Every structure is written in C-alpha cells, then in structure tokens.
Image 1 (cartoon, rainbow, N blue to C red):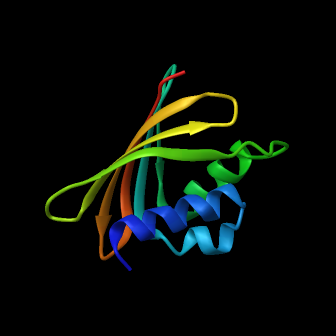
Image 2 (image 1 turned 90 degrees about the vertical axis):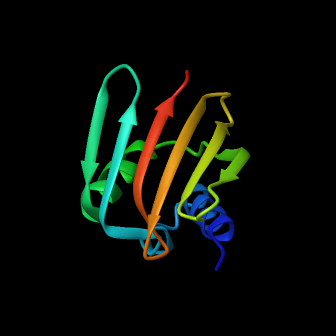
Length: 109
C-alpha cells in the first residue's frame, strides 16, 4: 500500500470510529505531539488509542483531508485537515516500517 493510500485508510478508520483497523496503522513506538493551547505528548499505541477514543466520545464529527504532500523519500506526509465544524489542523506524519511512527498535530482553531 502506498503511503497516501495508507494515510487515507487511516483517516477513514478514524472517521468511522473503526478503532481495530485504526490501530493497525500505528507503529508500536508511536509518539503523537499535539499542539493547541498547550502541548501534549502521547506515547505508544495504547495511550494513543485511549486519547483518541476519549476525544471522540459523544460526538459524530468527521473531517476531510483538504491537502496532502508527501516527501521525496516517501517517509513524511503533511496533511491539512478540516472537520464538520470548520476546525482546522496541520498534521505531519512520519512513517517507519510502513506504519505511523510520529505525528505532530497543530490545531489551528
């Protein structure tokens, strides 16, 4: 699977709340750095899944990827996302062993 297809499938799993499939895209040593009013760092798949599932509790919000750019070596992707409410984020994904190894998410709203 190409990196763009992988990330698109990852986004689909997130939007459909298919956490079992979602987990298959995460490297066991994933680090997620989330930047909003304050910075937060999440380590490992279990902590990542706990955080993301809690974030989606009691909401049916979905998002779309408006722009995606892939590095020449096919290991880094930037994605510009916008959700149903108009909230935007810029996400940088680093891949290792064809899995998401690091994510840097900058909430813009």
